Image 1 (cartoon, helix red, strand yellow):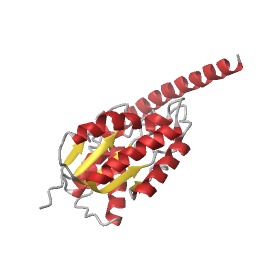
Image 2 (cartoon, one colour):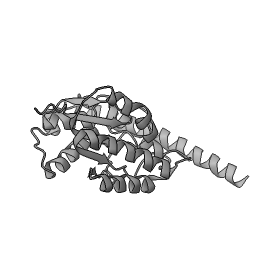
Image 3 (cartoon, helix red, strand yellow):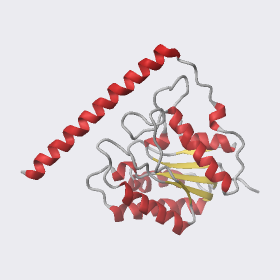
Image 4 (cartoon, helix red, strand yellow):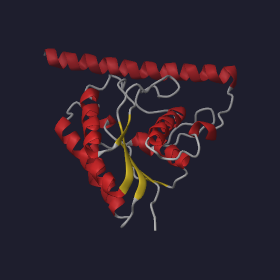
Length: 237
């Protein structure tokens, strides 16, 4: 008897989800939207701020506690916090990411690994290429599917920090995930973009939204410029 539990998701705050409404649409995890699109139950153990080592140390044991569990799909999106760190350790990241993929492969019929957007953070993350190389290599060696988000990003899809997806961004990631899974033979029962009904904010609300985004973006950019300047001063001293 097939008793698979649906979709299992590991990762950081992007997969954990939660945040501001966007024109009446709740900010929910892309992995949860993916599960809804597949018509499957969802188990999410992602945690805010998690790095690959945290997935191995905390999230895998949380899944092990569900003795005998197996899933239709395992999702792993981690690395954003790793590649933004000044002390990024490529070998350690690759090892922990691989351990998480191996763990999912033992318990899931299919596994989906997610790459990192190239335009990540302010100042821009310095190790995205190295992180993505490890993710793609691990996926290839373990037989995981790859959800490529390297080109992901737009004003209405990513917040002003250039890290966290908006509510619409989470839906857009799920749409990409479902397209990848459908190409691999999974049955898609609903499109997340068809499950939401954004409200029309009107011209004034849209203008307010644009001004708020511009203000937040300016703050993020100013902090980033100040950080770069301080780093250069320390390096020259």
